[in-house]
Image (cartoon, rainbow, N blue to C red; front, side, top):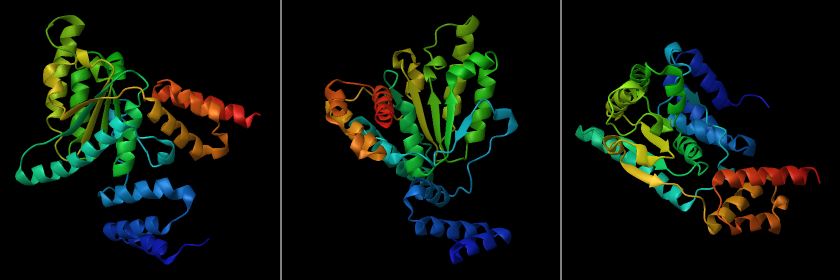
Length: 294
């Protein structure tokens, strides 16, 4: 299959450095591509272009290893199940996008921020990727556990560099294991003193993300977080293991996206007990492997 007229126009506009024209033609190309195999990529890249981005932002050398920017264009939406709490939280984040734009018009700083807490395996990180995919935004991931382990003594300085870079860039910024840094203050010596100073640096950095960034924090230990840090998050939600109805819906969605003939009664019965999303995915992968090898 050769290039159609819109593709040629896009290439011509790029060659002539007419970036906006190239973006407009690229959006048309995304709309015209109706092939199933490209559906998730064309959806995401169309959103990315409409949001004003021409590419995933590239990290400067001094941030590589600290912040991870991932391409979520291949996020498999058909294989992802949005539970009741996840759906409600996503709708609140979308409302927050509209609120941020209006507040900017009024000159009032507003951070679209969500803190998700709950036991491991309840889909906190995967949810952040889903948000980035649906809204067509770059996905930036920061794991505080790694930051602390690898850069103790320079954590506050590195945080400032990371957040300074993210200012003015629309993205979904995922702050994972935030409890490793944002602990309740009250100690002023040794490692605790270092973490207390880092908590203050984190709060000051968060206060500057008011230009359309979506901040999602994740923790298994909400009880450890500094109360002043908690106030930085517009909403705090708990992700729990799915109930029977949600488990069954997730199992059906996942298996139907792979091969509907794999969905048998014994697999559906796994939903009779409560499970985390991670446990469900692990179980389904094992069942798919068994089906393939039958």
